[in-house]
Amino acid sequence: MRKINYKSDFELLVTWVGEDAITPFSLNFEVGGRQFVASYDGEDWKKCKQVDDKHILVVFDSHRFGCGTLGCELTYYLSDESYADGTKKITVPVETDIVLVQGVSDDEVVDLSMEIFPNYKQGPKGESAYDVALKNGFEGSEEEWLQSLRANITLEGDNILVIDGKKFTLTPYEQTEE
Image 1 (cartoon, rainbow, N blue to C red):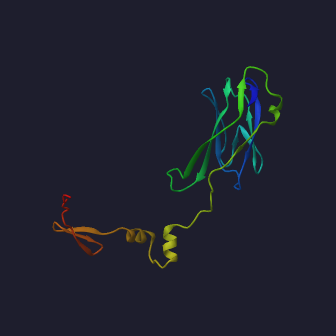
Image 2: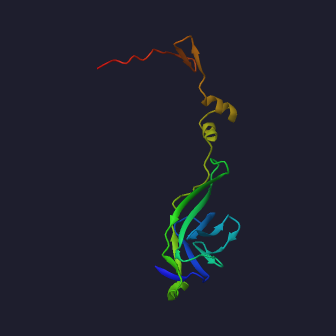
Image 3: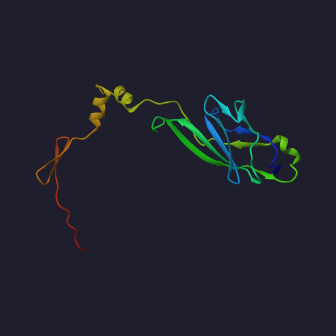
């Protein structure tokens, strides 16, 4: 464990491990219930800055932490139209080996660093199912395609189920004793 005096400002170099470029994220650091959030929303950097393609420098300035182990949680924000706000959030805990103490800081605190491993693979946006249907011979509007996916179900009398014109006779289930 690396020790830092809890009243000291400090910097932490974060290495983004993996092939993907840095995507929007937030790093939520916590000690004893007090939180410090460093983030990048795709445009603005808050409490951190990009050093290069794989490194982020988090600047703990006036963090107001007390004594204790520095905890961290990483949240990625990925574009995904499946979600109401257009964003899929993936949150993972990240371990640090940093302890804030009342005593003297370790000598090597100048080189504080940690690695984070993105556990996702954001690929290019694919075609919609409607586009695929068009490529495979469907002719019609998107609304007509959606309607073609819906089954037309009706009931004739008490025991004839009709699904898209095909008739099925319903028979009561009778449980037999073995």
